[in-house]
Image 1: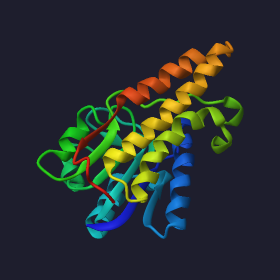
Image 2: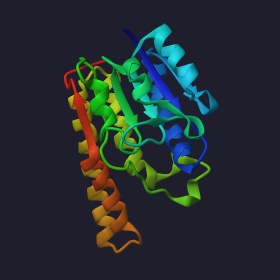
Image 3: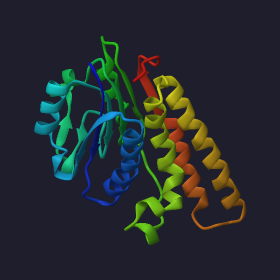
Image 4: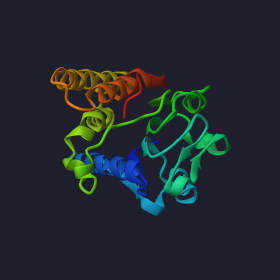
Length: 216
């Protein structure tokens, strides 16, 4: 297995546009650190291209963004890129899937009877946005409260941390951000209570399954 980072960044609705934009920050970090990576963006996030790359280049770290459910991970325009039919391609790898319900069932199947590790969510992965910045997601300070802690998982892995530590670091950032939202709630800022609930659900739902000691 090769020390290569594979990233998927579908972009076809507001949610995937935001995920793609924040995943681009990981690409910049990989470039600064001279980490080899492959970025599948837009229509290139399809089953055929990704399977070919996995088979030919054998990357160790996968960072998958988009929509999902308990049994499938989606790519461009909800094309299924991973399911039980090709789950064998994921074994022994270090994987973070920023998608709803990715760890509720699918993640357990990915790491069954192998040494891989899967980080994902047993609940929906959600985030609040400031519509004023929908055209420039990276300027959205509200969305950053949710997406920067999730980015921290991959940043920690790129720095050589274990999956367990990366998860813990991400959750520590979520706690700090929940405290920020609590201050907003105390000021009776509109929407603060719901914002807090969403981040708490992400915190509670973020799970590591498999080999927690695995590193990149």
